[in-house]
Image 1 (cartoon, helix red, strand yellow):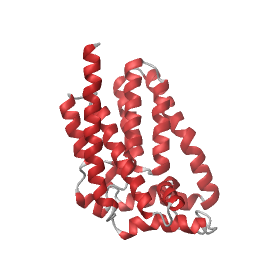
Image 2 (cartoon, one colour):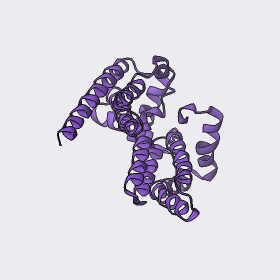
Image 3 (cartoon, helix red, strand yellow):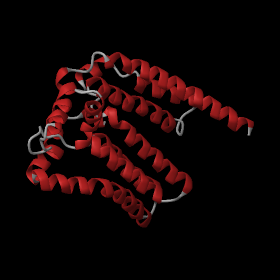
Length: 248
């Protein structure tokens, strides 16, 4: 019991340090932003929607649409919403660093887990300037999915893979590439963990079902509103041509 209490106290100190460092670092960009194009186009899209425009018809197309949520929150609280949106984006980055700490604690000693989380927290300034952390903002959902997979290994309950799939689906609502990469990793991990095909198919089914619950309705809505060809361009063609390395 004493060791457990000491461990919880140590974890709390680690998390507090990571939050402090990450929040302090991200605060440097709240006043300066990333770049005018990537800072302002979500706000412009939200402004046009607030003026009566329809996403995918009157407004610059963005898929998946969850990326507009921080801008929408900012515009609703303090129009035009630039500062509030930046704070929401920064909060996602801080959450990613904290979640990575808990994931790292499963595979390495605590000091190394802290170091790993701090490396993520202190992303290179050039990354912020050039916006290569576009997917990194929402990496927290992928990390939580990996933690759900870890719980499946601990408990032996395949339902945790359904939770992992749900988290990947939510992450894909915000950004496609990070959950796609995590999903591929989980698929390979399931293959490696189970010696038999029956167990593999069962776990893949749980994972796929979780993703489908969130992502299939999103795909259906987008296909009905903008059409399959445009949807294909946004999901496959555009990411492939722009080489989104953040998924790695």
